[in-house]
Image (cartoon, rainbow, N blue to C red; front, top):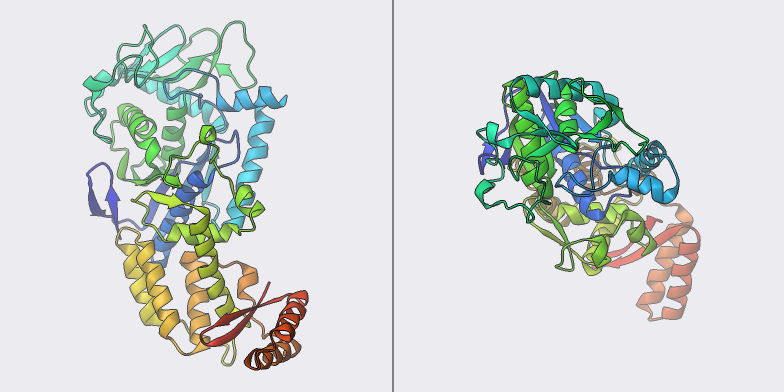
Length: 461
């Protein structure tokens, strides 16, 4: 399988390994994830499924950032979870647990598999302190009034992941001015708690420094990614494109600085999701969540289908019209699957179609091509049983845009089929009043009729 490596700027074969290690940056659990976040998380799921579909064993790990992510990437501002806790008059731990539960509920709605290993940052603070000690022994750290910082000038490859122009970074531009930082690109490994403030989540400082504090955001992922691999190189590291220039660059520098080993073989980044051609943001009022989609009558699986339609390396434009189109396309497949098997229940998937779809996703995870191949197959295959068997197999092991209710393996009740046939006769006679009455009667019994070029198709709601 080949993936575009952000570090090398080219498509590369994945490393040969009995079990491929895959680490993906998870959510900072201070709020609900937006659909922009979900585009990335869905891509992680598509990738892992594609690897396994092609016979590759995978060990997939993901983290929950439940401390240390400040409101500014310049290592200033409040901890996002602590800020939310104050606003809601809860503890930081309560906020984190509530949002982890919401995140996992939404994962289920989107048919995203639970990773093999899920880590919480707060459970790895001792390991973070140990890494800071390793970096200190190797001369990468220095202390300021507000924390322990990584000296990026000491790491000769700093900035190469994102082609960062270190000379072009100015104090007060990309980052907030900090007179005690040696370089504008330096970042906090550990932040000291203010002497006059008691935090919900704080620990004794590393390096035998008096007082308490908390870890920086970047070091958390370094520790948890290396926990996944037992200290070995991570084969594939995933994340949104917004994480590349700061979070992932810092993660790489401190990991390789501490271990002296290559941190990641291949970096894979997912492009932004735009909203009606504009950047998503709370200030724009367009930071939609799955709940917003559901309130407008859409299924989260409509969004999963939509994400399939654009390659992960390209910006994807979200609009309500585009989501409506995805809903209609998905419903057509749902109609096809209504009623399940019609004859032989041991029908096998179409091997040729499965084979070409495997090849498509093996070439830099080309989900749009895979989806087009599936649609082409559905348009030309005449056997309903083969269609059902093929879609059921590929949905389970790759696409995932059909839920269990869409794959009911049972025939449509005879009474429903009788009404459908009666309605069709009424339509042929142009008795549309009677046809509408019969459609409503079928709907009241829990089924939907959709008129297609091949005739009426019925599916359970």
